[in-house]
Length: 180
Image (cartoon, rainbow, N blue to C red):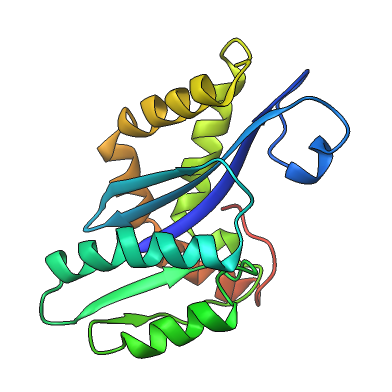
């Protein structure tokens, strides 16, 4: 199970960097997506700043029931990157309390090369760029959902299958940049 987040913004030009939006009118949503068993399963569109409490609510309300259903004997593994809300004390404590239900994988900082979800966010960004700018959050959210649910399962399965090559490339580069 991998959950990853990405901010989609539209203004005069598309920019995924929320920090750039402070002084201009921008429509923005933050998407968290998950995968399991070689397929995409969840997208949560958040229309607010992601703080630890918001993230914990997503984990408790969305992830926890899913993991309990798919991994009833507690053998599921959850991976998240090192975003500040992921590393917050209340979030880490919640995972500690639920270690018998699933395990939290340690993830090295600054290694998007290993995360196939980053490619998914790139595909979504390119498809959003190709569209007419959305003038409100509702239409941007709907478009993100439409793209997500129409992503090719084959594309994602190929990304998952590339993981051994990705890991080997990162090891060969001694943690440096790779073609991924």
